[in-house]
Amino acid sequence: MGFLEKIFGKQTKEEKTMTDKLNIGIILGSTRQGRVSPQVGKWVKEIADKRGDANYEIVDIADFNLPFLGTTDGTEPGIAAWNEKLANLDGFVFIVQEYNHSITGALKNALDFAREAWNNKAAGIVSYGSTGGARAAEHLRGICGELKIADVRAHPTLSLFLDFENGTDFKPQALHLDNVNAMLGEVVEWSGALKTLR
Image 1 (cartoon, rainbow, N blue to C red):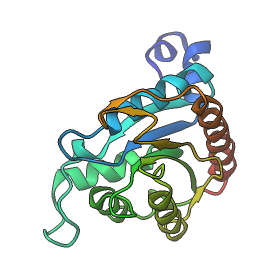
Image 2 (cartoon, rainbow, N blue to C red):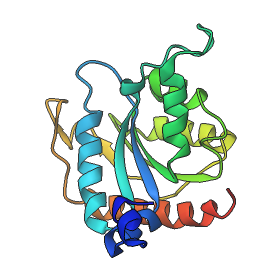
Image 3 (cartoon, rainbow, N blue to C red):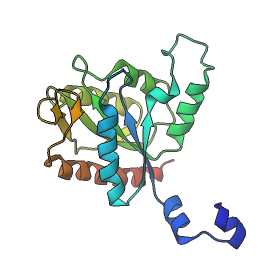
């Protein structure tokens, strides 16, 4: 119940719109120093926010200080906070960089630190690398299947050579806009459909 609802007994139109919309997390898949995933995530969020079809937020796995799975007793507060964050989301957009033909160790670790919080939700993938991050995205799709995450088909692929200057300054080509919107549209549609299963 919102603040104004408590006072006036009903939700304002703006509050109702916010609570009726799906919550989609844009997950930054890298934690290393000098990473470019925050630039890509910010770009995706700017496009997403213009759509007005869901509540979008950046979720940075670096903020949770997750230990390596199996190396501690599992009581670190970041583990519970990570699972709580995921549980409150209806769908995801993974920002994926390709490392040695796969996803980063940090992203795999974060994926492994939750199970039910991923289940029966949808996800899109925005990948980048020397070949657009396509091989990392394909590995991620297999992991998504095991976690009961329905990954959508539309897949923006960004080139380190064409969409970044000096490999660090993100300057995406305009041609990616349609693909990002197509991916977001599928994520919202599928997330809404899958919500009925939870």
